[in-house]
Image 1 (tube, helix red, strand yellow):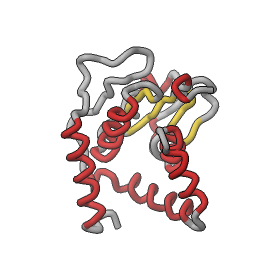
Image 2: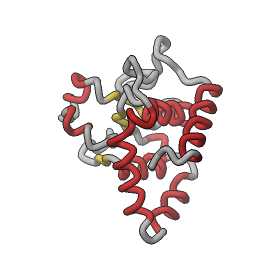
Image 3: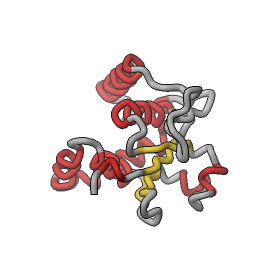
Image 4: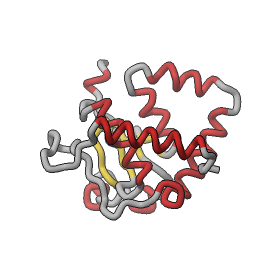
Amino acid sequence: MKLRSLNYIIIYDGNCNLCVTLVHILESIDQGEVFKYIPMQDLETLNQFSITAEDCQMGMILINTNVPKYRWQGSEALEEIGRLLPGGDVFVAAYRALPGAKWMGNRFYEQIRDNRYTIFGKRSTTYHSPYPIGCKASLSAEKPSTQKVLFSLEFLITVIGKGELT
């Protein structure tokens, strides 16, 4: 099966600066070909997938739309997203092969998830992707520019470099 024939939904925190930055990066790479996006604040849409606000508290969710019972959450979702990106399977396989890396990755994800607003800040409005489920790219939605994505990456590198994630 070709990768481009697969479709996945990423449920993310549309009020989290870090989460939105990562969605912008994915949007710029994928351009809505494989991934569609739902902010966890869109409870009406989440209800279509039997997902509650409480479910979202455990982290981002990835759903395979071809087989909706295939779902990943938290660090598992990040790994699967990485695996689905062009060339990403090599990096995910290497990460999974390192002794203790999975355990540390899970703990790291939990710390970021539980402290995301403190570390990265909270948006004043919920971000809605130009690649929502059920339709083509929206002309009115905020699309990330290359400059915005690069700035976001620089911000993440700076925060990580200063050790502010611990």
